[in-house]
Length: 106
Image (cartoon, rainbow, N blue to C red):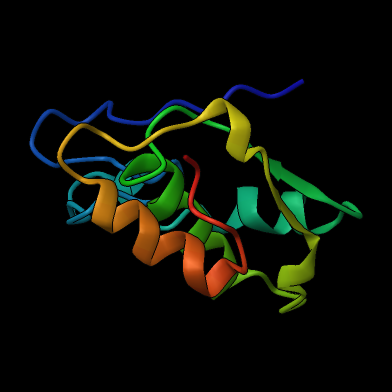
């Protein structure tokens, strides 16, 4: 098992578990975690779960889809029944679900 921490740099926001919103050139931990992405890509499926579907889950999923070395985004599996949008950001979640082929949760 491997734990990955995010948000360890107080000077930048970290929605994604893979890269800070604005990477800090003085902190390599805020850059795209290509090693983790490559390790995840080695599996048959990449299961994504989290709380904030409008922010953190969305950012992490988008980073994975954009940077998977294999390009096989069909490996991505979202556990959508365990997440919800941040209050007031339901439209951002809907914008995320639609291209993923998911029905917006009710």
